[in-house]
Length: 201
Image 1 (cartoon, rainbow, N blue to C red):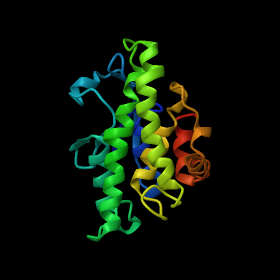
Image 2: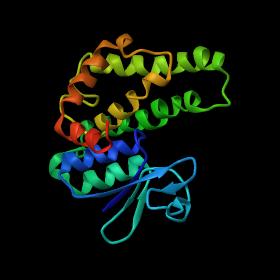
Image 3: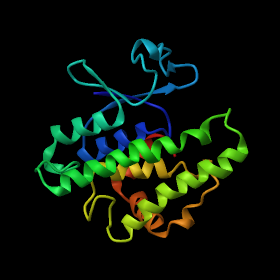
Image 4: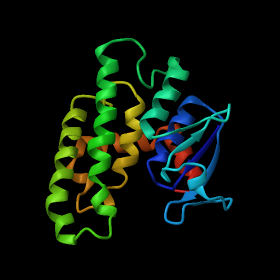
């Protein structure tokens, strides 16, 4: 397999999961501004969406979008239970949090990386919106070791990656003590250490 990634982007989630599963993978970085890969290829000819991650499978097929790739990896390797396979509330709660992180939390960061958004809007309404999302996560982590319960699942990797973007906002991790505990523990996880080292953290 081959993963197209951008340093510190949400593609880091897939790299962490690759290490969780012990899978061999080739990695090539993408400049998201120029849409050029590290080898000089036009990334838009590889993935017309122009975004990362994009995973080239062993049979040559390509899969894009974080949630789709996470489901693919989880269901190809069910023993690790990255997304519980049994039709239980544990499975649906895992999907619930994966969806929340993708559609609510991840997207709430977009204004902070957009040059055209006025600073007062970033400090005001967009920070208020983002704080509400993190308050919900912090409340969940007050009662559980991980976001969907007491075992590591796929959305934990995604939450770790997105939370690392907090320095781009007026918020501080100190506002969310249970999330801070989670982040401290995730930094000690071997898969996370390996993934960050590869991206030259």
